[in-house]
Image (cartoon, rainbow, N blue to C red; front, side):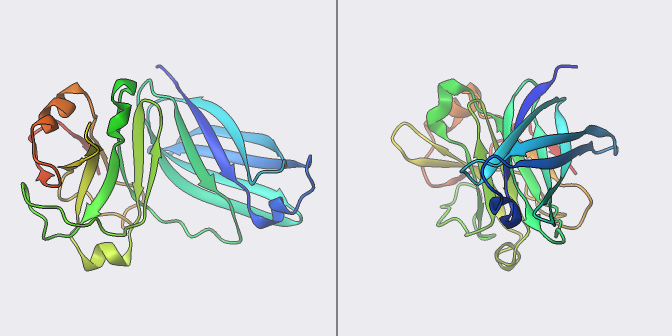
Length: 238
């Protein structure tokens, strides 16, 4: 099975940031798949430099993963738990922040897809809209929802966290926003039940929507700032 290269950016916690430059900080990384196999179980060393993060790298197959990080610094333990996906044959960057004390694990929902370098101007961005937004209707202003975006050279990834604002406007409409050549926006809806189980199950729900040439051609002659609901193939995991 082909492996994808992962560059993990680790934001250091306050005890680690108090360490002197050049201090070697031990980091234990466990990456587990959905059938509870530890794909990565390894000790790394991050050298404290002038910045507030360090990086480690590894290779894993495509799939969905749970990452557990632990670091000991200045007599304190800092940890983190996060979920992420890996697309086949797509290296990616993952960013995780360590925190001191108990970790409050929140199970999000995930959106991802390929986005070829030739279409980098499209800048796929996942947004949440009010439940009143309907297909072919105006989108209005996106909600101020806690959505973390990561755009790599040939793919995009979004983590959507459960929140009060999504509940208030729920069930919200989730869409992938694409930028056209005129700097306008097109919005493609993801499945309506995508967020139904966010925060309620041990693993995230996920949707894959590839921004390929067919998608670019589809939105090219469509009106901007409206919700498009095409019948296209999407991969959904619950």
